[in-house]
Structure formats: structure tokens, C-alpha cells
Image (tube, rainbow, N blue to C red; front, side):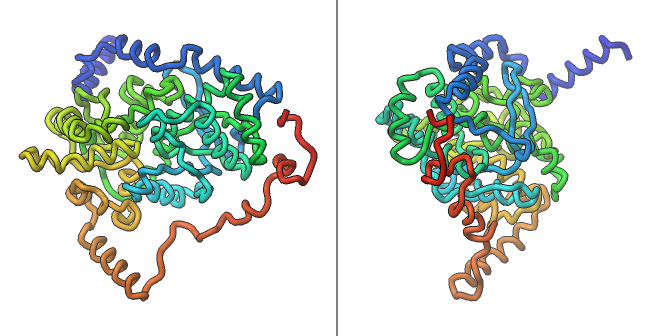
Length: 443
């Protein structure tokens, strides 16, 4: 077969797999992403300035170390992004813990299965992204203070931060750029942090958990329990993940020919499911922060008509996979409103972490906690061979035993297993505790 014939066959395969690609003006999309949403300075410039500030002693960089088992991935502009894969500090999501608890537990469960060292930080605060995106009631120094305070905690115990929430991820990238590019913000922030015995710490990379999961997905898929080959999965990539400082999001030519972010599409692909395309892949899920509060019916209608229906009608999807709190919540919990008006689509919506954990054999009720979802996830699980009835019966019995005092709660890790990190800190930060001389990086 000639090279031209090979190329033609590849093109035919692409058209069959991704029918919407022909209707997209990719140059227009890239222009819209890079120039409308990017920092005017460019990520490469921001990182160069970051290291210059470290050399001057104006900031502390939390570097990724060899013992974080880093992996280099590519970004939209081709610059490498280093993804740490172990010894990770978990920056959890307010919405996940409050509305979709099976989301973070699925992340932790997979880390246990793959023997990843992690810290489930009890002293983390919200990123205040709700305040910023929903009301605009904060200010740059306050936003930077919350960011740095959380990042200091990760630095203090030498676990690299992994951000669970898509909004926190995009928000923190913007704050990172703001701190690097605006000296006046640093000068106002530093005395505030000093009052708390901290300093300005900026991680070398801002990493979203879905980037970590994609980086680890081939290894995770080796422990897959169920066959997903017959599953048609539509993916929604969260706006705040890849439209805020988009050049800092990882891409891979093996995922939609590098035309979409690598995560979560690549994770779904590596677990064996068939990725399906649909025309409104670019659109918001409908959450949008402010209008989920002020125009909730708009959000519900948008989620149904602009996302769920195209995924079902065009992609014939069996499941909708996404990777952010608001997206899972909106796409999952808006479908009942459509049902009340006769639009009974019932497309199960899962976070990529839940999707992967279920495929690896996680308990769908104790770990993935699908009973918190408004759509029927059980049909999807039966399709891939999960013994739903057995899991459900055991879960109901477990709850009954807990109520009657016949069973002890099950934990993903021993409570307070990391207590030693609260009793001692690395040498490099002891001066903040009055145990040593100030380091030059505190200037």
C-alpha cells in the first residue's frame, strides 16, 4: 500500500470516528482559544519570570522532585508540562465533597490501587472561586492570599499539590500569572503571609487531577475489571480547565488528533471505550457560576438542549464523561427538569475518576457513590457487566449494620495516618517556626 493510500485510509477512519471534524474551522477555534483566553504575555514568558523571581529571592518555588515520579506531557503550544504522579497533596473541591462525594473517593481509591503516595489535607480551604466567578466580590490580594496559603501548606509538608476542581485549577493559573507579572500584588501580599509565618510559594506547575489521571490511565487500565469496548462515551471538557490560561492544558496527538485537551477524552480512550463526537463539544455545560444562581432554568435548559440531547442524538452516547464539579452536577442533575416536560433522555453522567474506578472494579456505592446521581447509572453498569444487584444489597446491609452499631465505618486510609507531618516539618521551613535562621529565599 502506497503512502498516499495509507494517508487516505487514515483520513477515512478519522471521518468515520469523528464526523463533526469536517464542520469545524479549526484555525478559528485555535484563534479563539489562544488569543481570546490566553495571557497576553504567554505561558513561556510567565515561567521564565517565575524562575527569575526565585533567583532574586522574591518568591519560593515548590519544585517537582524526582521522587514525585514526574512525566513530561505537551501543551497546546508544544511546550512541555511536567506532571507529578506520586507524593501528591490533594486540593479537594467544595462541590465534589458536598454534591458528588463519589468523585474524590474514586480518585483516592485509584491512588490506593496504584500505590500512589498522597495526602488528603484536612487544613485546606476553598479557593474562593465561587466568590470570584459568581459575585466578583473579592480582590486580587485576597484571592492571591488564599492561593498562597494553600500552596504553602503543600510546600511545608513537601507533597506536590494536585487540584481536583476545574475552577480552582483555572483560577489558580490566573493567580499564578498575576503574582508573577505584578510586583505590587506581591508587595501587598508578603506582609500578610509573614503574619502567618508563611511566605509567597508558587508551585512549579499547576496540575489538575484529570491531567494526572490521563498520565496514569494506561497503567490504571491494566487493572480494568470490565470490558468497555461496546461503550460509546461522549466527553465534555470543562471550560475552566481548558479555556482559562489554555496554553497550560495538556494535549496529545493520540487524542482527537491533538485537537481537544488530552483529558478526560484520552482517559476514556485508554480504558477501551469508543469516543463519540457531537457538534456542541465546545459549549459550556450550562453551569457558568453566576447563571446557575440567578438563571437556574436557563442552566437546566442549556444543559439538556445544548449538551445532553446532541450527545445522545448525534453521538448515540451510552455515558457522558467529564472532569469538573459543576459539569457533573449540571449535566446529571438537570435532566429531571427535561423529563418533567417529556424529554426523557436519561444519559448517565460520570466524572472520569468515577468512570475509571468503576471500570477497575470499585464498589459503585461505597466508592463511586452513584446513588448520589440523579440519572440512572445502573443501566450503564449492567451494560459493562457490573453485578449491580449484589453490590446494592451489600451496601444496604452495610448501612443497616452501621446504624445498629454492628459494623465499623470503612476508610480509604487510616484516619490521621499523616499526623507526623503536623508534628514536624522539613528543615527548609523550620525558620518560620523559630527553629533556625532565615533562609535567603525569604527576602
